[in-house]
Image 1: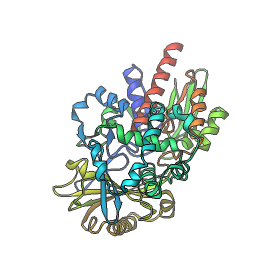
Image 2: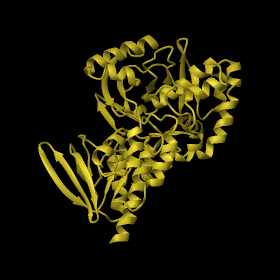
Image 3: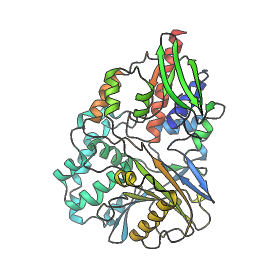
Image 4: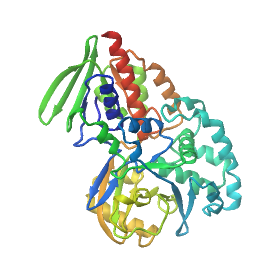
Amino acid sequence: MVGGGAAGVSAAYRLRRAGLDPVVFESGDSLGGRARTVWRDGFGFDIGAGALPSTNKHLHKLIASIGAADELVNRGAVVGVLKDGSVSRIARRKPLSFLSFDALSARSKLSLWRLGFDLARMYSAINYEDLSTAARFDDQTVREYADRYYPTEVRENLIAALTRGLLLVEPEQTSVVDLFAAVKSLLVADHLWTHPDGVGFFIERAARGLSVNLSSTVDTVTEDSDGVELVWSKGDVVHRDRFDAAVLAVSAGDALTMHKSLDAERARYLNDLDYSQSIVVGLGVGTAPPETASMVLVPRALNPNIPAIGLGHNLAPGRVPPGGGILTVFYMREWSRQHWHDDDATLVDLTVQAVNELQKGWADDVRASHVTRWSPAVVASRPGTFVGLRDFAARSRYDRRIQLAGDYHAQTSVNASVAAGEGAAARVTALLRTIS
């Protein structure tokens, strides 16, 4: 198992449950990937996903399997949009809250009948485990779609804000399929899940008893008729080990580097994928802002570099000291590239200044902080990405000893990663039973 994030650990867990003996290789110094919580001075910072929609069926099944379903905490989700110095909110479990959503005028709200109509059209095709099912709708960017049907206020204060805040890419750069996958997730989930120990608690539980090699870099994985050879290193020591099969639960670029014999058609698809890049800064503040939203979207006219500010204490109050709050600030790709090598203290100072310019006083009393640099962050789909995914999926035969379980089979999420890992584990199990 190459990769110790949600996909890799869930695959290893399922293989062990099937009676096999998986080994996990992780290049970092801990498991979890983007589903991890880091603690600093009493503040629990979720470095990727902050909460998980109740529509995450594969993830919920895994959590139930490890016996932890009754530990989940359900939270209502309130999404806000910043406008004119105040936050307009939509409560996901209270549809009528849209009537008081004053980031849009009444006339602009009327234009959203089209959004509902198109969501209904695409609804059954949006599959959070394999978005190749939506390939027939993958024919334009979010910007092209929005320009065709909506006034400027809707385009900037809702559609562009959602695209940037949830996908970390500009609407000019991403496929309309990703927009509707995000809208469906927002509208359908009746609540969010979280856990007192952090979002990544299930990875720690699922990994118990697994053989894990941390700080281990896999160089190549080669398949032959008898199995696979793994060349990996830890420090200056290079190892060569043989296994019956392998699951590459890594990003597209890493899969291409490791899997030299990948067929040309699938390699071309992976090579063409684009990823966003993001610096994420978490601020632990002594006094929580008087804001009920769990995420506040920032229109690009207000700040082109910051698409969203998460308020983690509104989802998980047990992860802050009494009265405290957590502000999680996501940065867009271009700003992140420009500041990638800034030291953490500089990034925190820039973030405090930016937050207070958007909402005065929110970041006045910083008690703790954490900086994460995600490269790659999430798959940034373009028109044609999901058409390519359909062909990629069709070529992913079941009789291969090297299976791919990367974050590119659907819209990047913890649930999609778990689904990819479990699918790869099922194919490996079936193959090994056939040839044993």
